[in-house]
Image (cartoon, rainbow, N blue to C red; front, side, top):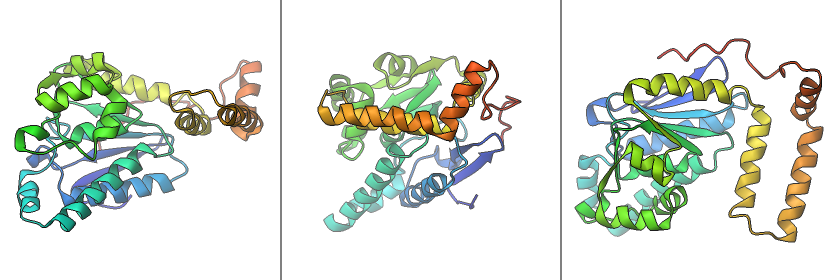
Length: 272
């Protein structure tokens, strides 16, 4: 996969990718270059039909400190139209991550501030360390979490989003789990082991069924019962039952054998 300056994108031979934020000396704070490279990296991931899922991680002690202060200072000196262009680029990143066809799992350690909560919220799932520190910090520096707000509200609920966006309080990984922003929170020393368990579990699942389920849940949304949604769901299960993986999964279940998409080995991902 292509080289980047602010990122690392690695493909595991078992069929998933890890996208690393890799500005360790800047605590993985993002700037215009990182945002552009993230968009390009997600385009590569989306184009690779062999990938089952994506892990989003940060190198070093912190997941991401949010926006780079030097970049923010430059933005303050730009006119409205240029700032609008920057905002549109950030929105492109968030929406592309949210609508990615394969499942996404964020892994959070250390600090996750500002826009980093947008990245976490755009992923389908997130796990983290109990002692991670998260913060919607924008109001402390006179800004608002504007572009990321729809995703944060979806991930942690409107009431909690109001509190933490308006107070800029820091909250722990354990609190993030209570709010639903993280699916699980573990002691920091156990995070790698627990991630390995998540990876092993996802590798048991049909790649095409996970894609179809993600499409299904996006269409279902909040679950408003309409005739159109009923027809969509009926068609969805009919399509997947007659698909090659659907047929293989049913045959494997009836024959009491593993389906052909399950790996013969579940060795942990080596650190690249």
